[in-house]
Image (cartoon, rainbow, N blue to C red; front, side, top):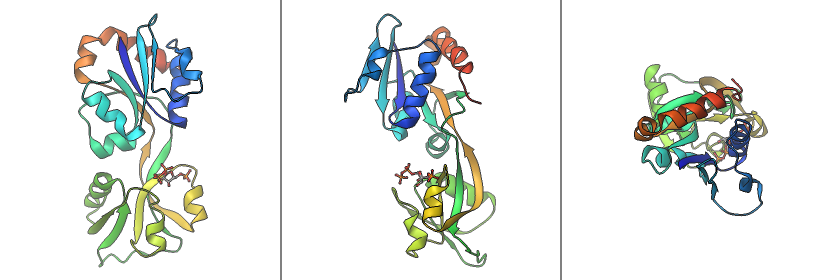
Amino acid sequence: MLNIALPKGRLGETVYDMFEKAGYDCSQIHEKNRRLIFENTEKDICFFWVKPSDVNIYVERGAADIGVAGKDILLEYEPDVYELLDLGVGKCIMAEAARTGYVDQPQRTKRVATKFENIAREYYASIGRDIDIIHLNGSIELAPILGLSDVIVDIVETGTTLKENNLSVVEKIVDISARLIANKAAYEFKKDRITAIVNALKGEAAV
Ligand code: PRP
């Protein structure tokens, strides 16, 4: 059986539709319940819903053969997996944002609030900027408003959260979208099946 980890939530549902259209359906998944595992024994596949930031862990450790993770998670945690396909959905950007009208003071250490510590460190190192990271777990937008940080590094999708909190993008850091990833050993042992899925999903990818 091929185990597939999907990110719980709206992105996962979009991605499941792509699997379904590509011929990898599992009708039970449409039933409204709290189940987390769905099998299609005829097609020999098993989907399970995982917290989006945990998909890489399931795949890296082989509990899932393949899975779908945001590029943000892959850049932040650098899991030892193969990245097989850009699915072209879940598109957003990772950006530096600040209160509208913010002016950087290059001689001062910049205080950066984020949950993407590694992405932020790498970005500021690449431009040679001194920073102090303040690691937060959510509602990052509050930090510059309350003076906890000068800027934030976070996901911007529609821009609504920034706008409604009087914040603006200062700099785009990187484009993000959902990626199909594979466990390295599973990719060797189940190469034909995984390749067939990649090819079928290519026809559905929104890139
Ligand atoms: C993400 C991100 C922003 C928001 C951006 O938060 O951290 O807060 O989405 O989306 P927008 O540009 O469409 O407004 P998420 O919903 O993942 O929750 P979080 O607060 O746990 O980060």
